[in-house]
Image 1 (cartoon, one colour):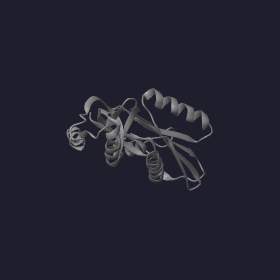
Image 2 (cartoon, helix red, strand yellow):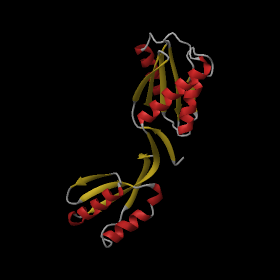
Image 3 (cartoon, one colour):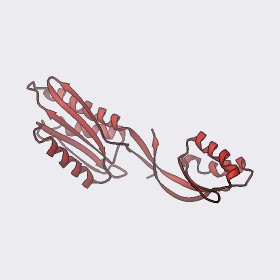
Length: 208
């Protein structure tokens, strides 16, 4: 697995449909246990709600996936919410939609639309990001060259960290497709004064 999509941060949206109040929430969830703990906390918070429906997917392939209609007619809540996650290709995420019944029946079609909307808007508000298996390069840069190197890193929007001692020691995250080009670019930029060294790989977030 070289990449997967997930959400950046917890988010909440709300709307009213035929007097029923729908509160949609989306959360990052690193494990199934984390998803279930968040769900339990929300159920305690909204103990008086008519329904607390949910869907979550965990694992780089989204292979741990569960959903629940929580008392709504079968297939009208949890499954449409799960379809939102699948359509966006999102994993390591939990979506919970809380409904306070307003006294007017929505019908099966209306429920599917309402829960799909709540899940979709919550996921969008949480911000979908791509986590890619990213090469990390270490650079040892003399101070006279750092301004030029840093300008290049910023122009490329490469995330980096730097330690300032007798020289600048930086660790740079490079998009996987630029793994081969980055060292050559640094060598050319500094007239071979700097040679990046591959020092590891990790999953890092990149905007979609």
